Length: 369
Image: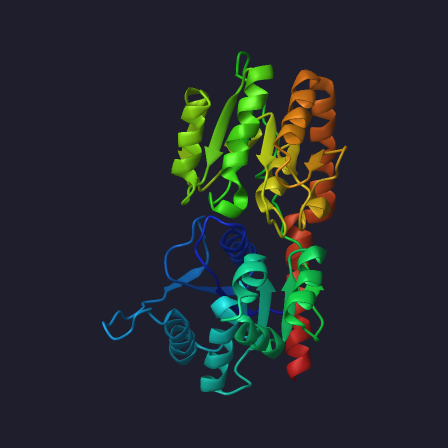
């Protein structure tokens, strides 16, 4: 196997794009490839073996909005000029990373490296579809040597929303089944539901609290909240109003969530938009059934009626009913968990998906020769 020099540009967020970019960089480094990561802060999850390039953004009173896209392009150029060439620059989240990659390559000479853009969801459905960004997002995608989307649903949406004419490969998010795996529960552990997200409005955290309140009234339980974001205070205020605040454990952003997921009975994800649902996949790999919205890429991850239940967005009562059913039938819940883990390993195992990315890199390099 040829050893590649790969740059990864991403947001260092709790959300799926930053986590997947970091996990991919680590996996590639473990396979002997040379990795550089470009981002404005250390990634949320650890990245051993990856050379980190923190992008400094110059603040000046004349510049109302600091030009991160320009600073990122400059950081990429500086890295190539002082540390040696890159074979591939893999950018996660189209806005503004695909444009920064295009600009950096133009400054270095168009043969500098192959560019791969991975679309993760809101870079298309929210940011990229906005009239202020649609044209430049389309251009960045079209100028990439290879484009991937994390689900078939997102691939179709990208073509529909932006009118993309080039091919887009579906390479799903992945999970390490040796890290995310079932764990023995201690005798006397409470029944526990869990939710992980960046607590934005699109995740519908208020629905989450309403679901939990209904479930807790039928089957006394606790709720673990992993992550943080702008809607978290409103969610906890609603929990107080509904009388379930003392049944909730808030853990904040968690770098290694596997243990907390594995010690749970059900995972809740009532999102309005979800192009893949990485946290749902990680729960399934831990043998935890998922109750979620039937939206976006979630039907490609969760098998309704086999590894969890999918209900329409906003169907608080339906999601609560599904959760109550599984909590009252431990044998069925265990069966769902076993099926979920088996299918997570079969479809989304880390090594297999990483190899698909390497093949994507090789195809892009061959195309440029």
